[in-house]
Image (cartoon, rainbow, N blue to C red; front, side, top):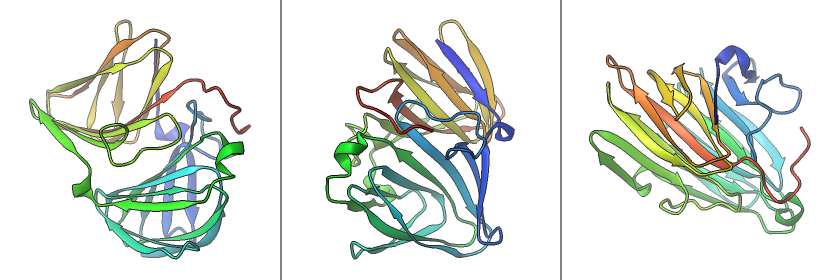
Length: 253
């Protein structure tokens, strides 16, 4: 197994307009300079923060499954499928872009969101009709055990199910507490530290991570991975699980 931690200095940067929206990108687009180019079919991950209300105008997408997850604030959406929607803190928008659609996004002032691209078999998905769905925070099931809250966003226990083999959780760990999760053989955890500091433990390795860091845990044999908050502050993680390899060609980055 391997645990790697990538600081914000090792992530790509981006912006829209004159800096109304700024981005850290744990996984950037080609040539943007992120150390991590992809994690299996996890193609792109940006953490966007709006300094002012700003709309990213209509632009096209096809093939990819694109999730916008609102950490705080408000994100508006309009598209050429006829949708005009708005989602707030804890909510998500998912576009399975299929054969293609245009969409625009408006981030309210002081909004923070993740935009994450998952890569299915593009030669197949580009032949399917595009879809859009959104979910409010209350629609995502969550459970709390020993103070640790786990919100299921993608996967068998969540309302969002993708073509791409993936699951996603938003995990809040109180100070001094820990959360353990089985990592199947041949899979990876891709984790962004949203808030706090803590440690990631496997059977043979451990690593510390702080707010904004990107943690990638991979294993060839099944492992129990533990995420632990420091004693003096809570830890919040957004964790995505994907296979390290898939049985279809991936876009060359």
